[in-house]
Image: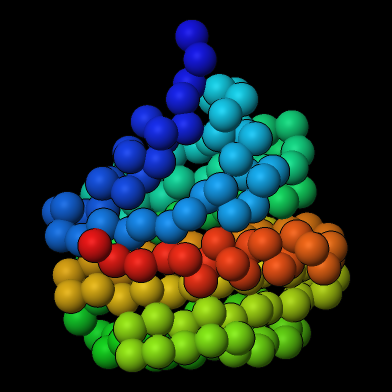
Length: 173
């Protein structure tokens, strides 16, 4: 049976903790992601709901499966933490944790009152799942969302541009 992308996207976007807010983004802006979603290959998608306050979806865009990928989109939905005041502080916490594992370079690409988009490069670091990451953190009133583009190698310029457009399209509803 064909696994239709619309069902997956609907599940991802309504799977926020306590259904407080929904994250919308345009997955069509990165054609390889669209192809994976249209393919119906369930091996390319891993949904982890073991912790109902932290839901994680990983979609392998390049690779053999959600367990063996070279490029992936990870979507994390969490209940708003009480000890972190906003997206910028969340980013600072992520940077601190990453730098505790290995050397990394971070650069902010865009930010506003409720979100921040940044890039991480961690070369030759086995403690990180990927050497390169593009991140969009979106903080709502009750739910927070992290979109992570993870790549074990460098992204081609066109891929990076398309991924950034996808991340920029993310908004709460």
